[in-house]
Image (cartoon, rainbow, N blue to C red):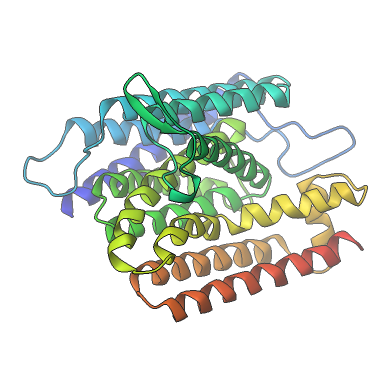
Length: 362
């Protein structure tokens, strides 16, 4: 565990050290936030290269952990090279399209194509969903057996997660704070499932997020940009896929009923409850004939007296509560307790959605 802390410290410190040069570079080349016409915000002219610091901070820590492994340590990277390569190339693609989007207007269709391409790399490398109820249409591709159902579910998961977290980047501290909480629970779940490779990935990601967290808390002095939000979404998709695969095997030994097959699907949905809720609220705004803009949704919330700090606190608390519920469901083999926690989580989401509906329809 001591080596874990060393790798974690490397991720935190190196990401933090990159903040100043990334800020300087962004200001020098005018990679800054520009308000939409007719709008004025406190984000105006803030540098956008926080995602660059996050990306290189994580990758540097990953290289340190990969090449500096203590022979007798239990927690080490034991991932096939083709999977690691798929994760690296996929993250580069997502970051590049995000960086281009920070400078130029990129069509949404092109972003979707890049996200699907990154997801396909994961599928072909074996980093994908492994749900028995999606295991349909199996086929062989160059010696690798793939499931059409699970492959499509993986592509959908990657695209939805990247798109959902992109919505949260416009709120100071929201995205990086929620991503940190989610990654911490994925780390614990990976430890519970004895998947030490995924747990190390999660810990390095948490360290990188903490290295940049303070700069992004309100009032932010640096922004992630589309590059940073895309990278966070992609890594959360990868980490959740890896962790849920190992957790599925663990739960099969814990539960003797169908919960062992359902929980690996439910757990990640609980962890990303807030991004899903925000996406649903924006979709409702669009259906109601209002602009599907997060800024407008926040303005509606402020009219009800909900400050930005209050919204952050609620989002953090709900995500932490969902994570604790997921952890208890995976650790305690009680079907009654599991159903009770699922009911409580569903009730929480219904109440929050009902409150947002009141705000939207005002």
